[in-house]
Image 1: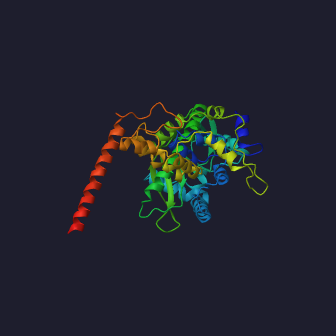
Image 2: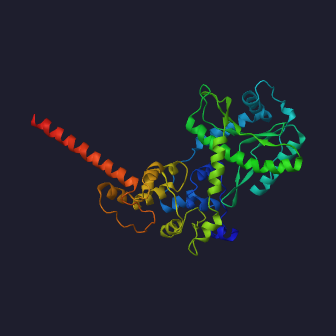
Image 3: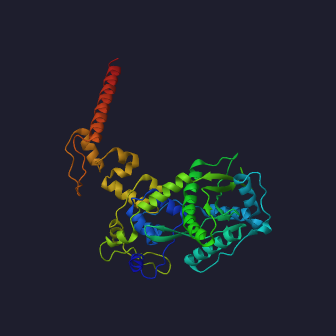
Length: 395
């Protein structure tokens, strides 16, 4: 499988690592084989979208990146004194935080993500066996995604003397009067759930080796700037729901080697980059390679996937109802294109699809009945409006 994934990337192309944000987005759309393959093979989807002519327009600005790094450095200064104080205030109220000198801060440096993940697992085992406080700064954790390992890096993990582990997520968006933007908190919770899931695997091995009970806490600590200052504040976030969803969705992902095995011989996503980073492979070849893998586009992809604009363009060209949203897609049952929907609404024969499906909607389909009823009501409303307009003109 390693050779086949290398061939998909191209000879000499280093795999692009997955972060927790990408994993959370992948788990939110487990039916997309295209994203599962490209992420599992470590292909740079941003560069691929650029070469296809549909570049992604979202991402963190350089200013926000610098601001976030500056804030994180402040939170972790002095051995993480502020961080541990906030953890005790929010998760262990009434108990004093430990002195900085009593908190272990192990060195997690190692060669490559595999080495860093192994070093993190060793540091977690040693800290748990010692029965003291430990602060792990940017540990590396492994999680299996579609049969391939992915490496994720939380901002911090705190080891408690009782064997508990707490994920710390540091964000640069503010908490105003103790409340942060709900959408941003939700995204942070989904991201933190990936870290908790990865830690659970390590916790099982550590418990077996140390003989101590290890519990990965499902309440993570979200640290943000307070109001409009650069001072840190924090709030506990319960990620049980996000954790259950992420675990279930990742389990549903088709294994990468199964998707790769179904590709036409010779399929590759190699951009053939020049020394100055320009893609020289013809867009037609890249488009054919991308279209060889099925996608499950939804408007939500626009905020989470670099290829979303390409997939949206194709969905619109094909007239796919998926372009209207998952809710609409679910309501339309066996109708797969907008042309079929319009034909069903007007009572015309459903046009033959280029690729016939076995679940094409029948005339007695509830979706067809609902569409025809809606079309009739619309026609009545338009006729009534026309009559009122004529009456007004006569007056």
